[in-house]
Amino acid sequence: MFKKCYNNNGDYMMIVFGGAFNPPTIAHLNIVKKLLSTYRGSQVLLLPVGNDYSKPELIDIHHRISMLHLMVEHIENANVSGLEANRKYQGTLASLNELSIIDSDIRFVVGLDNLLGIRKWIRYQELLESYPFIVMNRKGSTTKEDAQRAFDDLKHDFSFVEFDEDISSTSVRENKEDRDKLITKEISDYILKNHLYEE
Image (cartoon, rainbow, N blue to C red):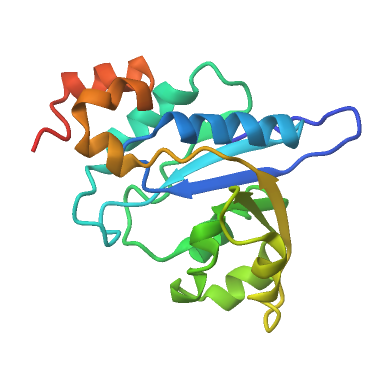
């Protein structure tokens, strides 16, 4: 559980950053740093999806949790949740509702590309109505205005944060030669030690 950390203005929020993190990349790390510098006094909670999430290449969540801990071990106000480790996948809304029992001021982080596909998510309308979103916005992708218009028919609350890095976990898994440029040394060592992503 988090110890709440308020800044001089009394501002605080729990920023939930969900994903597969298969594996966590330098881009994930830099998103955490960007969020903490943009929303000072807040906490970032990394929430990896469980093993039954519909991605066949997903490695066990306990490895992904361990790598996330290595990624943020020296970052104050960042932590990792194992909420989805021991249950069937129920969707983002169910996880945020459970976390809201601990903390009532939650924001959910999503990339702009993922936001535009959110109508395929479980109970997406209720998710949009219930929680404000922080949208990581990359240059060259859809504009903020277009993103807002795409959800004119639904109640929503979007804040946009500019972030122009694009390192995918897929590229880490598939390009062993360039891997060390895309992940931290600690995660690289963990992958080698545990013989992950070798096929």
